Image 1 (tube, rainbow, N blue to C red):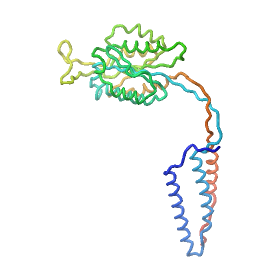
Image 2: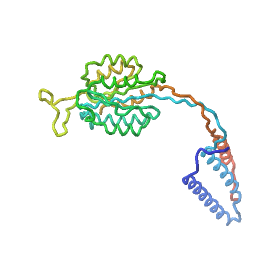
Image 3: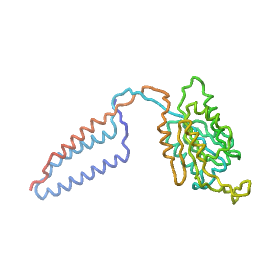
Image 4: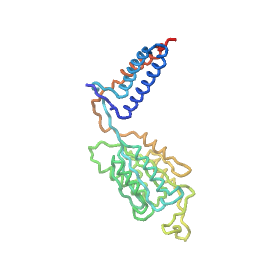
Length: 323
């Protein structure tokens, strides 16, 4: 049974109508010029028939005539990507416009839209870590969670990189033994200021699990003061303005020991596209291989015949008016 991959819309119908209107005007003009010479210009009808044939064949090829079925194997692959986002107070620093957190949110929204075939989850942390969104294919829900991220979503406290990593490992340990392991990547978004004291044991477990961690350092080495909501700046124990700076060393160590990479994000150094490329190169686990029946598109045949008639139209010369 013959089927069509595409249907004719009003736009295609309008284009066909314009073509025939212009061609009809060309024919009438030729007949008008031939009449004073006692001729009718009937030879023009040869070209008309030829052109109607190959324009019709081109339209048929564009609509995608499908006839018959072909059995093809389809492989579905995917990976799990956990976004670990630092929501400590230092992420409000304005050394990256408008703030570190706002810049990171905009870039992460782009990342989510690039990985439609993968499950993505969201964990937020400061001194403690929480699952904001479990692994999901629902990009709309994840984008909504990303848009609501603020530093006041988690209890106030200094940054500790251990809780979000332990939370991910606990999620992986809950998988049933019979489940097929999926390739898993972590994207740690932080300024790197780690005030935790027990990272090494978690890092060794993470390295043995095969999970790859990609760290995104957000901020600048020069740093910036932390503005208060009611004006002024946050002060340290000595009464001076507190300055928060990017600390890349902890993030670099995490990435290196898990086979991942470290990237930076600032107004002067934007390596976020490199992070997206690194995640793209991470191969997902094959989940299923199945054979499906697909319609065999036969557009090549009307297209080849149309090209042949177009060549004939170019080579064939018709004298419309004899002088």
